[in-house]
Image (cartoon, rainbow, N blue to C red; front, side):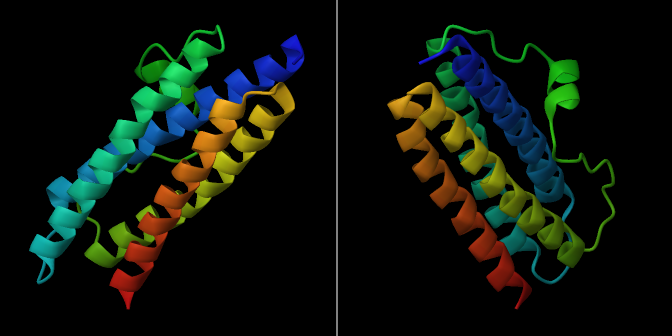
Length: 150
């Protein structure tokens, strides 16, 4: 394990952490603001997905700390590091909400794959193995959101 490989891993983990926080807030935004004939089902699905995403933030943050580095420290650090885009609107149609979350979760899969590659290069077997579970969770969210669109 080299210092450069560990630094690259930490950078990718902090990027993932920023994307998780961004996706969490977006999912909660949609949970709070969804409306229409499928309100209840979407409201509950968005809340379940938000809880799953939020649970990962602590795990990812602790992987950063276990690699001897600091995590993101606030909203500004999250905004600077995130590759996913925020959605400030509260008036989107339910289909647009679902499409955004589907696309963001699919993009998150690619971010997680980059973390796994960095973990392999750094010799961090724990992060490498955990990335498979994180990928599966994101892929399941993509699947549910895709099937909801019909």
